[in-house]
Length: 298
Image 1 (spheres, helix red, strand yellow):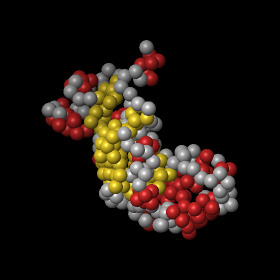
Image 2 (cartoon, rainbow, N blue to C red; image 1 turned 120 degrees about the vertical axis):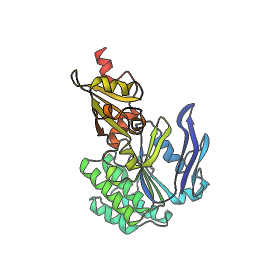
Image 3 (cartoon, rainbow, N blue to C red; image 1 turned 45 degrees about the vertical axis):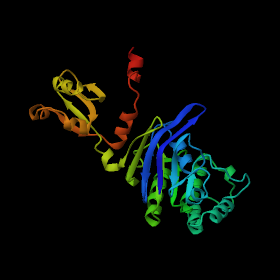
């Protein structure tokens, strides 16, 4: 239902997205993961039809998303830049959204207001940052749009509310399956509800696959330095650390290591440990060279 083909976007000569291509054809909860500035928000606004691509295109139901009524009726983007009438109450905003989104569940919205202890007559502009984020999520889920884009939905929320938020997203997805994209640079707290991950770095899609693939993307090898050095000379190393004179640990690509021409005798002297998806994300987005240790040790 959504597709990007070589989607590229520049702002005043600065690249925000470059040749992004991926497709999501059916209901799923996908985590759009990337550090701040990776291009997540630009991607979401392109899919919602708010931004005109500089190159390539974003499609919703096989139609270009930009300023398209089909996209507008079937996509809801929830982010902190959502604009509301300055003096509108929460109930008035719910009524307004219910008139635009044909699947909007008013009963659900009012129930969530009560659950999160939000007064329906309160004005949005008077709410704190975290409470505003909660209300925006209520609107986004209650709209039941076929394509729901949640851009950093937990930003500003207390830890307890964040836990409720992710459980709410999962329960609502089970009740009304659709395409849900959630952007964040905190992968760990979202893992329990994700099916797929769209990994964006420096405006490019590095990988789009199931969560299970990211669970076996990188591995840590630990063993005698002389054997570890043989691996280091032939594979990209994301992290290396010595533990005394007789032990060294490195992080490498699991598939590359499995394809490495290394005897079983040498492999048997190495200890392998899996790296979590969040750990893999941290390693893959870390700047090469010039790290904190180098900065202070120089």
